[in-house]
Length: 373
Image 1: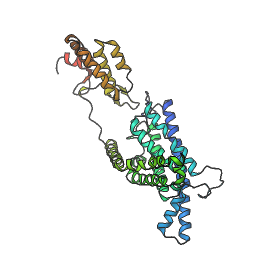
Image 2 (image 1 turned 90 degrees about the vertical axis):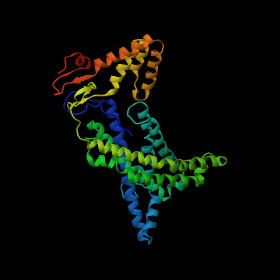
Image 3 (image 1 turned 180 degrees about the vertical axis):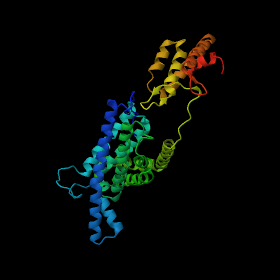
């Protein structure tokens, strides 16, 4: 969710990292450390509790339940650490999961390419679960809390580490270490269902917890009850599409990682818009489309053309500019011809034509005016 494409400059030392990249590396690294700390406290505490319960005569199933009830309350002491100066699992969980709110901000301001709405839903549901487990003793002391916490942590440690390596290497698909790549796109198959199950147990336990229900006062218990219970209702239809979406993302990611290199460009091609440090040429449609549309509109309305060039979120904002162009064309037949000719002329000057043997590259206009081979 939280990853940006690193900037590049000429050279052979890999991607040149800017201030935004260093900030994202720091953010993702700190989150990775926070979730790793939760595992480092929770797993030893859980194992110790299981061993203690089984030695007292409990069955393995009951011992697992008993240990699960104690994970949220894990401390350095219960994990066998010394001294007791480091924070508890509950404290770290609160801060590291709350920090995920920044991921909504990252998406909103364009630091990453994640959709704002989807990011808000994903982070928001976790923040709600965090709020309930923080304020409900019942939710804290049931085995589903451990299921939720471990599922979250086991997903987040490789995810944040994956984002760090993706930014550093400049390629999330092909240059990240394969074990990390595999974990990033495979763990969801197990940990999403277990995490959702754990979250549901927290919601339901909170709905039965008098301490939680009384947060807004005795008279408003019904409000807190439905606040807790509305999420299981939402999760029922929403869980499967989310898992299927991740399965689709996994398929696409693996397809890209192991895709054969494309054949060299020949004939009519998009123009080169960027050259990576390794010499790879990038032919992006966005800057070309903006220039063609701006040139077309500028034939009748230079102010609208400038708005096209200044559009930052082209992927989601280009439609309004196309509508503006059509509206300009509809004013008169003369304007329609002016816009069409200006756009075509710009396209002919921007698009490139590469000879059959790849030895010569010209503009498409030049290729059309030249004598055929």
